[in-house]
Amino acid sequence: MLFIFSRRRVFMQYGLIGEHLGHSFSKMIHEKFGYYHYDLKEISKDHIVEYFKEHPFKGINVTIPYKEIAFKACDHLDEQAKSIQACNCIVNKDGKLYGHNTDYDGIVETFKHFDIDLKDKKVLILGKGGASKAFEAVCKDHQAAIVQIVYYKPYPGCITYEDVQRSYLDADILINATPVGMAMHSNASPIDLSPFTNLEFVFDAIYNPLNTKLIQQAKKLNIRCTNGLLMLVAQAKYAAEYFLNQKIDMDLDSLVDTIILQTCNLVFIGMPSCGKSTISRQLANNLHKEWIDLDEEIEKETGMKIAEIFERYGEDRFRNFETLVTFKNCIKNNVVIACGGGIILRKENIEALSQNGIIIYLDRPLDNLIRHDPSRPKLKEGIHTLYKERKDLYEKACDIKIKNDKTIQKTMQICIESLKNKNLYKKFK
Ligand SMILES: Nc1ncnc2c1ncn2[C@@H]1O[C@H](COP(=O)(O)OP(=O)(O)O)[C@@H](O)[C@H]1O
Ligand SMILES: O=C(O)C1=C[C@@H](OP(=O)(O)O)[C@@H](O)[C@H](O)C1
Ligand SMILES: [Mg+2]
Image 1 (cartoon, protein in one colour):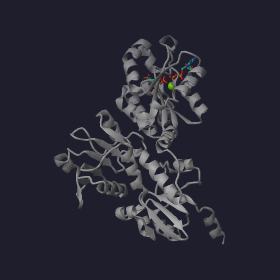
Image 2 (cartoon, protein in one colour; image 1 turned 45 degrees about the vertical axis):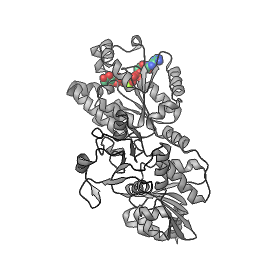
Image 3 (cartoon, rainbow, N blue to C red; image 1 turned 135 degrees about the horizontal axis):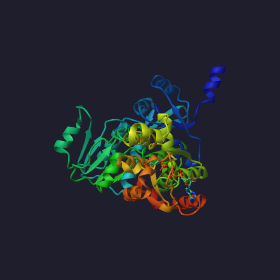
Image 4 (cartoon, rainbow, N blue to C red; image 1 turned 90 degrees about the vertical axis):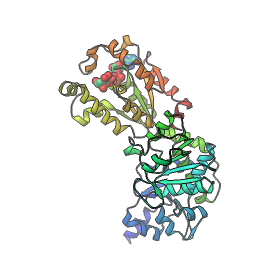
């Protein structure tokens, strides 16, 4: 009896099920609709069949790797779920399960938003999992001329990445439906875009990090592109409409903006002693965000003070630690990060921090900077020499430059005001 009671207590009415949900934004999105609590429930492969048998929910979303099992568990399926053979949304009506695939709608919504006409286009879809099938269905329904699935090894119906190099470099649209480039592997890209000749649009279904390596490259090459955030937000809205059996009146583009604001990081760069650590910590307190100082993280990881690392191992080794710690922290969400002054010396550091972060350059008058401090070994080279070497790198790396020539409190207020500028966040769209 007690057993049944305790199990009932944890039943969720609305939520997301999947195997690993650590990086999901779904709770945040669904609760913005304002109709219900939304929970995240990780279920192991051993328990998933039983979960569907019991179906203890009113409405759920389903994510990797259970969309196909969900499809099989449903009593009724809509056309999109049938054609994709996978469900990401199930509604429980009087004990019967109604399956939908709102990923399909999220994809259509995204192509529409960017005004991409799929008709007669040559489309490459990387990956052959659940998301890939939804993209394939959308492309075929919208009369793309060729829809080719790319897989990393030979597989029926798929081509390999070598085949792409040989005969598909004239593709019009490229879609990443693999997890390559996602959070823990954010330094990887599924494909190099530079040899493509005709790419009109790149669609990366990943939304964390907001800017994957693939998206960063597309932007560099001036190819129009999107991450998976609008798709995610749109599929959530359509799922909520199925859950509630009513229309939800919410502008998706503004919802995307809200999610970006709540998930992106604020990253401080600038000369040694320009105020990065001090001002970013106060800003984090003020905005109720977690604060991370990369120098402190290096000291924690190595168990040594910065000056000791320089002395015992030299600058190069210090820079390796710095890059390691940068890669570990850059894929977090909603954190404020203080970097060390030399972070801009390696391009890959800034690229990594830019995946989820707005880069803020704190510019403090040189005359106000500390000249001698044994805990800051680079100062021995002289502030003017360092500034000459680095000035352009700071300028180039930053999204916004803020003068720190007033009080700490005042500069922090200026940061807060400047960060209200919506244009800053366009880099994530
Ligand atoms: N606007 C300011 N007015 C007065 N002191 C400041 C100002 N900005 C920074 N400082 C001081 O400068 C010193 C170095 O700041 P810190 O945050 O450690 O710099 P960074 O992390 O950029 O090296 C600290 O003592 C800090 O309080
Ligand atoms: O400018 C630099 O090369 C360095 C700056 C330091 O951080 P601060 O900028 O916080 O002093 C620290 O990362 C290390 O001593 C190297
Ligand atoms: Mg510092």
